[in-house]
Image 1 (tube, helix red, strand yellow):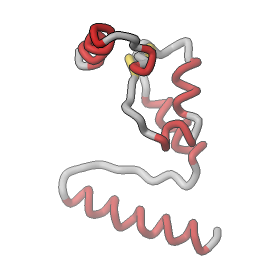
Image 2 (cartoon, helix red, strand yellow):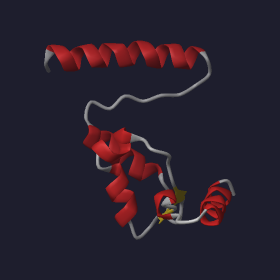
Image 3 (cartoon, rainbow, N blue to C red):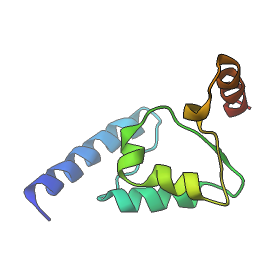
Length: 95
């Protein structure tokens, strides 16, 4: 490990502890690939998935994995060309 990755791990440990004190759960992954695979493993077949502008999802390859998955239903809000389509997509994601 490097100084940088050791520091991130320690910061994550502190943050996770504080979140748990507030009744929340959190997990730290050392790499984007680890996080991507863990998240994909949690998504059940047929899950409807969408997000709103998260660059981390793009950076770790999760967005592409979801877009190309045959097991997941991706609601791509960026494809909406009219306000009506956008409203319909927002309604579908809250079901």
